[in-house]
Length: 219
Length: 240
Image (cartoon, each protein chain N blue to C red):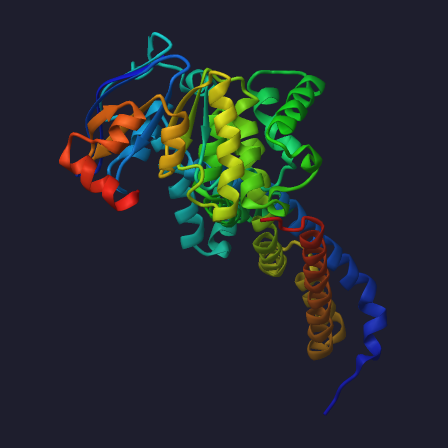
């Protein structure tokens, strides 16, 4: 057995820089996903048929195709369409954000549908419009149910962000690969990378259960 | 105040209302009784368009509200509705439950809405619970808040859909009391209920529904004690 973790302190700054980019990618992508997902999720339960169908098609397409293919479509495919290259960072957050949007939409849809029909009926019978009912009655209740699965989505996205290493974006995994070409210590470096991912996902879990407690479920 | 003409409602192939002609006068308390599945709740829910009638017309305050392009929100704000399951908003306090409609629909300033809400809470006898959440209240208290919430919109008529059916027996009285005082104040009310005592005491007229039709109607005492239709008689013999 030939293990040498002594090289790790020297490469830590590079790995941490990669981890930082990973967090940035995942956070921006989940924020984009949240915005897309909220609209698409509400559209999925709305009563405008064409909007519902379009939203459904988007969700089906994203969930039915690999993120890696979606990433290649944006990074390698799109430039030939628009006639100029797409920067890797932009391609990465675009692909991840659009991907996340579909999953968040399903989370939002399920959260909304879990709210009793009587809530909508009570709100509408007061004369609230459909939009006001969603905003003041349904969504505030749904958000409590949405937070835990949203945390899972954030964790999944953070791990999946390792895929963008293939378009030469120096996030954590890619940084590690670069470091290995210098140190020839794959086992040690990948172990540290795994631990860094673990620390990040555990931190998100903690954050989610904390916010769950903050928004204590009353019903 | 409210009139229906040939009102029909089907759910898929199932025809629940088979042509209802009914008229509710201002300040009248109309009690709708009938076996379960007779369509009485559906009838009530059609009146404020929570259910879209399949055929027929509904007139409210002289306007045909089943006409296309009717603003349903404008109709609903004038008709209060109280549900069997209370349907209070669990994420809002008692006071917020009551002020939501006046603030968002009537554009009432917050302070005015609170003032109205507090007066109504006093009226239904639970002033001390204004900061509580619905889950902290008993069923009877929740239903009284629900009545206050509907009244806060200053509706022209109130619809009650089995308001005491989900309550423990000892809480039915307090809810009926609130409804009785409303009736005494001259509120126009349509009440679907199994409480025959309430029908007799405060109802001006009773409609007996069976199989999607109004089978018999008349003054409570007469209808409840000497029904003309055998189906009414058979129903009453089971519930009285």
